Length: 215
Image (cartoon, rainbow, N blue to C red):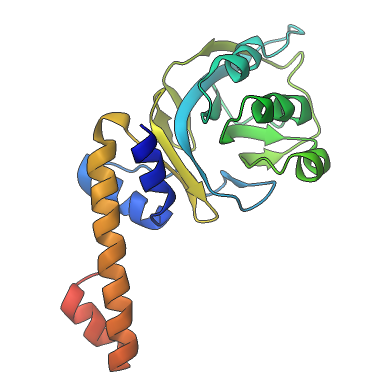
């Protein structure tokens, strides 16, 4: 796994998205609304997933809290909310402290994040979220499962799938096709570098497109 994580650290997120299209025959990139809310740090790591659902009970997000402590170091905590996009924060300062203590790579949220000033000031931990909200999940949503398939930003994420994210967006790489996707991503990066050099040398976008057939 470490060699895959290291490999995906060095390829463009756009190339990974294109590679998932080609290798897997389906979209791997999340909706554009799932974007960085704390900083522009790149996130790469295996997904550790949490599912939340609506409730009127005042319950802590226990599955998420346990997973933060129990997931392997370097995990990306992925939280999904069944049945909609809640105008509440499913992540905040204390969960960030736990994630930093356990050396996780980042968090991807199909909901809101709060305590932005604290997270930026004290941790610099990368959080990609649908929105920002001061509201709590208590009395509104509860965690119902962890390490199960979830949907975030229009993409199904399985535990162990590799998350690759930066300011271009968030891409989910299916774990059983990860090596193929990485190889294709590297090939796409290399071709684009050659194509860009040709465009500059020839002073012509058309010539670059004609030779490589890629835009």
